[in-house]
Length: 511
Image (cartoon, rainbow, N blue to C red; front, side, top):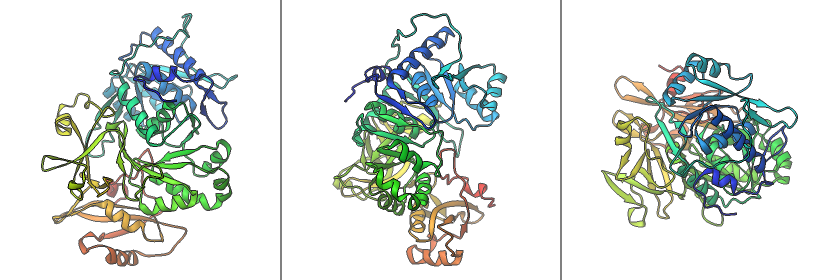
């Protein structure tokens, strides 16, 4: 089924009510018809509370069918603000204030910090209540409204459907408004890139407060009337059990999740063989070439690496499906928006004449946000002639495939020598004993910055720092060799499982 819809309401209402929307461990299936009823019920109850379509509603729910349904119900008619349930009370207060939310939806008897923050700020708390008989959910709002199943479509394509914050690793997080048009354009781009159909089933292990999980794992399948499998969160120990039980056709994740899955793949060869995946998708961070090759070998399928960011409603480029060429270390071809490079304030388009020129990656298209909220400075710095500046540096090869060479803010200046930490990651990851690696900056009095790396070894292999430095000397020029290579049991990650380079030295206790 091909949708040409501009709003979430139009999209959901066009889908066969009997199609299965969600499957979840320990829960009964949810059909699209049940999703529609929940959307109608939610719309009626929030209207009863005088919550209008331009109002912002925070959602503080863990992964699962309740979160997926609630996100769709709120984003369809209001401005949804999904928040990480593990925030502290002070973090909730910051985000509630910054967003100016009218209400917050919280699962009953959960998220004490989110509740306390809302109470202190006098923000309405709406409990999400489980119905024990059917195991479905509803908002705990008593109304006397009749005919609430007569669902009125009030939204249009320019309405803000969702606001997310940027990660804010180096400055105050910026608010990114995403319209109905942005969401639907990105869902269309991803579903077309992956050639999804209503027979496809996506196993979502990404957090549902993150753009990757919300758009790639929920909206893209919905765009083609497909099914989503929603466990309560990522668990490498249960992953293959879910594969065996629900038989998904694909899954999407960040590289650290893929690596955790790979570590358990040898023990689950039978499950992999009996439940073949059409493809595996990777996004939100660079996938080391060695991990891609190992994934393809372990699962006997293709790995599709994509490049995304919040301001683009996730996907910007992607490697294509077979029989087209996939390139390890590349994020593929433009997959929705226009993609170009900016060098010396000149726009360099993707063509053979401009191959091998490095510049800042810039984008424009229907999936790209129109600008940050209440942040004229960031907007003036982030747009040029209608193009959005991603802050990433990249290069097109002779076939037009994009390779990211680094994050401009992450480029390390070691005494005047510029180093892309991503290049160091790749070299270290090619060592047979290394499971995970991340290069990062450490402040230095004379050099301004120095280069360190942290690695996790694979399967109890024994190697020391000097041996790893000797390995680097064979592959890297002298100034690119890390001053120290830390062998650790765990590398700190962000809430989405993504390795965070900026500030890593502080998290590792390096002064």
